[in-house]
Image (cartoon, helix red, strand yellow):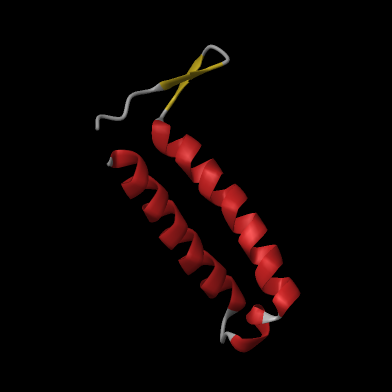
Length: 67
């Protein structure tokens, strides 16, 4: 699949920026769930853990869309 620019209120936006925002919204939900169940207490560096999960989610979304 070829990614093309998205017209957002008259401004052409790169498709990766839309995917980045989508992954960020997903990470907000996942981070709240992880904090609620206490998962973040068991990791060595919570910010690094959240960032790595963000990269995994973003790459999964890109691979899913590219299929």
